[in-house]
Amino acid sequence: MDSNINNFTIVDAPEGISGSGFFATSLDKAIGLARLNSLWPLPFATSCCGIEFMATMAPHYDLSRFGMERLSFSPRQSDLLMVMGTIAKKMGPILQEVYVQMAEPRWVIAVGACAASGGIFDTYSVLQGIDRVIPVDVYVPGCPPRPEQIINGILKIQDLVHNESGRRRNSPEYKELLAKYGIE
Amino acid sequence: MTPTLQNTPTDYVPVLMQAAVVIGFVVTVMLATHYLGPARKTKRKLQNFECGIEQVGNARSPFSVKYFLIAILFVLFDVEVIFMYPWAVNFRELGAFGFWEMLIFMGFLLSGFLYLFLKGAFTWDRFNKPEGH
Image (cartoon, rainbow over all chains, first blue to last red; front, side):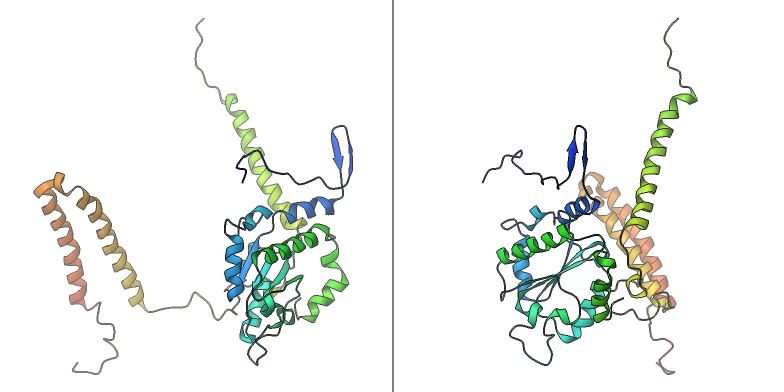
């Protein structure tokens, strides 16, 4: 491990027009770049995937290097909901409430088989996938997934954040999607 | 002519300008984020966050004065204990004088405690018990 403090990388500038003393790019690209490196996750950990998430946040895997130094336990300040673990049917409305109260724009990652599909718990009490109550952006398979897989999911989310158009959240398709879940 | 250290009110104009810039920046950024940032202000979103659970009732409901008494008594004896820590650290230096001083201090507070006890501040269910108890 190189501990040289000068040995860090800076994000590349987005595509744009540059000349002497100026650089111009589209607002979407600049905002996307800023957002993707400053996501604030809200960990919604209910079971073993949460333990894997702890490893992901710990120094060895170090999720902080993607700009996620600060976990938020209040939905008001977070824009990435990380659902990790089995969600019982009684937990469904609570999960939706947390999602609704998050800051705009918001993304959701379903970590593990349970969050994605109910996993092995094909029973009366378990929600068969959190996409029955909230829209999900990225699914991470595994039971539980390794930290590398969670990091891969995070990189996929960052891709989405980076390339999201500023108009997406106002589009009729998006509103229709939310309306499907009974969210205004 | 000798150089003198004189302050005129005009010397402070840069400070005022700095203050204006700082306050202006904060106000502008806060207004900009509120008006330009994406927001979805629905009734459900603007509700108090109670860990995802629907809120029930109002927090500002009347409650029994007994809880208030307990809280105040706790603060009283909590402060007493806080005083005892530095006293215990300096116990040897303060000697017998410090010992008696602390005893007087605790005596005062304990007399108040005794007063409350005799007044019946600790008989919680005084009004619920049948006569003769």
